[in-house]
Length: 247
Image 1 (tube, helix red, strand yellow):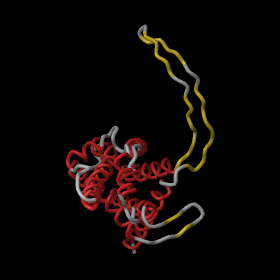
Image 2: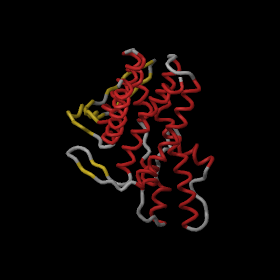
Image 3: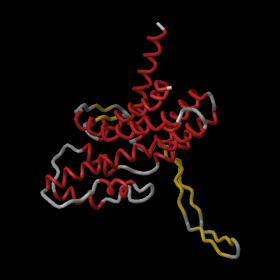
Image 4: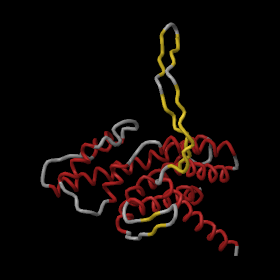
């Protein structure tokens, strides 16, 4: 009976995590307003520092909810409120950079032509910190000469590696925090990161294969990108379960 309850709870959490990651991709929940900051001039060590005019949007997005969900799980597993706060910080640091180019490429099932490929080449995704493009391109060149088929195959190999690295980066800060505070050993963290990285492009391929389409009030599923988000959320939950299995 106890095993049945544990299995049921884990199954519910597995599905919930997938749904929350899908909702994370939907963006803003509530926009409360915009804080306008006027230009200010400060003198620091006899040098003038100018803070320009800024508009700071105050809003609640699903990304924050998803991060709080991770913080809750992290805090419960560790038995510490502050570990949960650190997990939230680590999650936001890891998730903050984009991955749209590669997810869009790997979840696309429609025909791809030369024009589409050129738009991929011109995309600036991952070229700034943490420099995912440069690292992936070093090992697998994004662009090669040859037929369209050859160039598409090469680009998809590059995108697969880039997205794997991006998945690792997403969970790297949380993993480092868990290791530093003695919650998991180093080898568990490394295994978890490798698997969560590999599962990112895998979720894209599965999302492209699964043709399920359904719309609810705030939740939508469709072949490609949207189904990928649900599947990758399931893999995210396994990221938390794996250390318990390996320990």
